[in-house]
Image 1 (tube, helix red, strand yellow):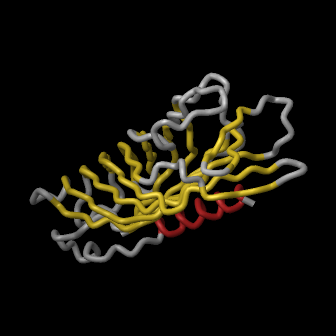
Image 2: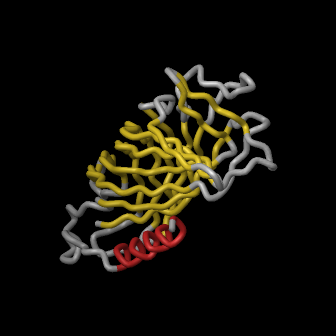
Length: 230
C-alpha cells in the first residue's frame, strides 16, 4: 500500500507544479513572490547505527506546507522563507521495540528472525526557515533555485510498530525525541528540485540503548524531491 501512495503523491506534485497559478507575475509585477507552497517525498537514511543494527524495507517520508516568501533585495533574487508544515517519516530497521512496565526495550533481530516489518513512524509539525536565492524575474517562470536553511519539528506522534507472521502490535513510543531539528538544502530548476535534510538531533532521547547496551543515537538523513507551488 505504501508504494502506490508514494507514486500518487509524486504524480500529484508534478501536476500541481506544472499547472501552478502564477499570481502577481502574469502582468510583469515586480513585487511578485515565489514558492509559497511545497510538497515532497524522500528516502530516509539512518546514520550512526550500532554495528548490529541495519535498515530494512523502504524508509520513506512525505512533507507538505506553506512558506512565506520575504524578498531581501530590490531584484527579489535573495529572500527569507519562514513556514509551517507537516511531515510523516518512517524508519525501518531490525530493531524490535517492546513496551514493558515503565520502560521500552530494544532487541536486535538477526537474519533468521521471523519478522516482516519493524519501524518507527513520526508525525511532525514542522517550521522551515530558509535563506533563498533564485534567478527569477517577473516574466520568467522557469528558474534555478538554491534554498538553504534550518527545519525545526515537534513530533506530536511517535510510534513503534512490529509485524511478524504470528504477531502484530503498535504503541506510542515515548523514547522518540519530541523536538527535532536539522539542516536543509533544496537545489533545482523549474519543477524538480532535490531536497536534503541532515539531522542535528537524534531520533531517540538521550540515554536510550538497545539490549546490548549500545546507545541508539540514530540520526536521519533524508534525500528526495521537493516541489514548490506559487
